[in-house]
Amino acid sequence: MPDRGRDRRSPAGLVEAALGAPPAEWTAEMLARLCEERGIRLVTLLHVGGDGLLKGLDFVPRDGRHLRAVLSSGERADGSSLFRDGGIRAGKSDVVLLPRPDRAFLDPFPGEPALAVLCGHRDRDGAPLAVSPDTVVRRAHARLREETGLDLHAHGEVEYFLGRLPGEDGVQGTSERGYHAVAPAVFGEPLRRRAMVMLAGMGAPLKYGHGEVGFAPPEEGDPLCWEQHEIELGLAPLPEAADAVLLAQWVLRRLAREEGMRVSFEPVLRAGHAGNGLHFHCAFRGGARTAEGEEPFDPVRAPGGGLTDPARWLVGGFVRHGDALMAFGNRRESSFLRLRQAREAPSRIAWGEFDRSALVRIPVVPLGADGRPVAAATVEFRLPDGSAHPHLLLAAMAQCVAAARGAKDLEELLSATRAGAGAHSPLGTTIPRSFAEVGEALSWHRGVLESGGVFPPSLLDALLGTLSGGGGARPAG
Image (cartoon, rainbow, N blue to C red; front, side):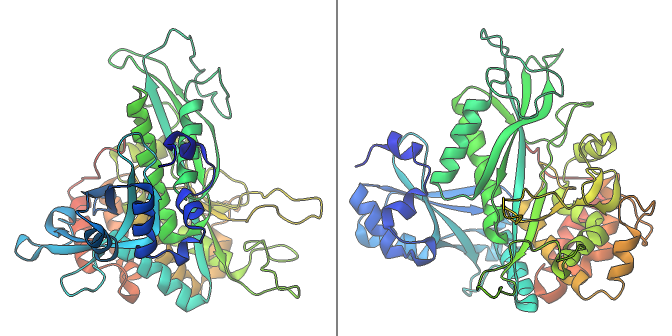
């Protein structure tokens, strides 16, 4: 069996390197043979629950036949516990976890070697489970691709605070001065780097990581010193982008526990300090080819200035429906504190080229010596925070983009909400400041989310009931 320490340091996707084939070609049989060749006895079926958190089911297969059955057919589970807000009742609660071979990875943590496989959900009849977040985001992604001929990709900026008791090393940051700080000025750099290498080995898309602005010193009632970091993931199709956020948060929680630290994704850890955003960057892929057969690298800016049509759909969809998107992207009471503080958080329904106070931003892209972008241009949705449910949020974002594509007043909307124009949304809305206001927005826009059969009414009904009662999600970290 190969040395796991060496594997954990590899920058490549370990399963892809071992199988010698891209994920799209992986099969249950290939994964079973990998387990047998490497002596891997433990298999974990991972999946996203209705609460947006990662869940798991462990197996030690009895023999090769059992191993192949688990990897190909999965196992049943109690849907009434996993999706209690989706209308699944205890009398008919069986659902099936169905492995996706292309979403397998080697568990990077010390202990018994294990193969982990991300799963979707099926109902009692074998159809995709309607209330599963995995099903919802895949339906939204597929619907938008069918209607536009383009593939919407996204990536999240995972911001988090690491907390520890002040150490003998004397490392302690400076209030709100942690942006791009490096060791020894920050204590969390080794953990962040270790997390990035682990995620790369798991096949998760990555862009970069760095120290973030926030820092909070010990105070009465909280003896921990907190510093903020960020791991920015890489562009991927919506379902994979949502999975990557969950995996990044899972890895960070595990590493923090190993290191005797605390990790928090809370929208605001302490009043007056920077909060944890979870901005999402989006870009359509698969557009028209150039004469040389290459896909144009800038899917946002049109030749000669202005935005491409797909970029205008993105901006228009997020601006028009951003208040309703908060039901999935801003799920804690401290979410509203983050917005009120307006520290690196949107303060108005607007969009702009570089305006960080706007709901939607068009970030600058570095250019190469030939004048062409060296990275994919994106549209950034800056409203979500660390409490977000990534699968449902990305699904809702796709639905809003689909609605904007067919809007007759799209040009008027974009003109009226452009930053610097001194205007607000023509709908007369501002960013909600309470769960009740978010619920009102969700009620107003729910037809957009239900369009195409993407969001089940039962799921939205349950969410509206929670919002009307003034409730949000569980703690974010």
